[in-house]
Image (cartoon, rainbow over all chains, first blue to last red):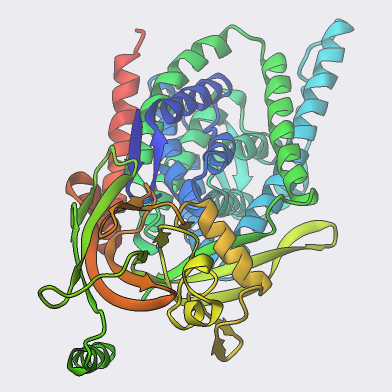
Length: 307
Length: 258
């Protein structure tokens, strides 16, 4: 059944888009991520312009992270003060991102920047995750504990001033890296149409030593607020959010996420991270391929305005 | 101006003795309004018409040719070309096409090149190769030669998107003087008013001309959403986020397991 998307200005098959929402929702529920890095490329692939795809996916991520955040809230697994600190700079990062998005679109280089950033981010993060989980797997084989505990190991982050105590996460860190992380996630998310969960969770663990008990819930709160505000900002400045497209994606995503979460709970953490790493890496390679191989069509058209 | 010239020409023809054969075109469009709704996947309009003598008992010729040019609302479009820079493909050069039709259909009963000679075809802008597409090159405005790389790429891309088309079989003569024209409006046709220019040819010369118009409009829900997004961006964005939150919350309630 075809449905006409009023902002993207093209008809799509409603079941195809719903199916994409379900599939990405399943993966996002399984790994506890937003899934924007999969959804945005998929939408571009079915013919929706990158700009509309990025802007519309933000609301899809807001919905799935809200569902997740409620579940973590019930389990009391969210560190509210830490989330607020991340948010204070996250919103600023989102606004900067939306501004740069508009500018790059004007310069005809938005697609290139999206492509290059995906390649760099996804291949690096994917490779790191694969490496990490393979190491862990090997340690388990040798009969040692899977995760390496490094109590008291301090990095440069712990030498910074403006220290704050976050009770629920049981950490005592400087506000500077917290702000820095919040800003960069908001910024990257707005430009690339990703929630940034797959970047934020490792950052919180490695830089701030946030324990696994609160890390996903807290990251979801940040994703939720940055993505909801990115939706508003993209709609207000670029008029590119397709509400019909977003609605279909959200419905599929929310349902898929529930089933994904159940599957994810049955798997071991290390195995799960290896799978996610492979997935992230593969998407990165796909983008690299597109940039390096000569495209079938060298020319492209962009609407500048009506007269 | 053009109309006055035409009237003058017609008057001249009417006064001339012995009276030259002259024709009048009477056309009617099946529908002047194409409504884009949520299940819109394109529509085919039909233009019916007859060729009549402009005076009672006037004589008609044996064979006619018809070229119908349908133009969508004008747009400003940028065509970009990718080139390899440091091993990756980047948009390097670009040209802006100014005041070009967003939809362009050249419909005729046989190929335009067979209807009129190249000189007439260029003067009357018949066919995709002869329509003026103004480009901005730096500070200059000009239509380049038909085989300009950017112009060719532009027309090819628009043809691939189904927005530009030249169909030599779209006009059917039911009798030597009654014709039917199929005007395809694709699903991605932009909204706005479209002009329909009907030109009649006999023995390679233009003998009559008339025009009509149609409108492509978003209606109901589609129009509401598109207008809200454009005119009330902030409210629209707030609504979209609220929608996301409500469905997200609903999902967590429906699937709650404890």
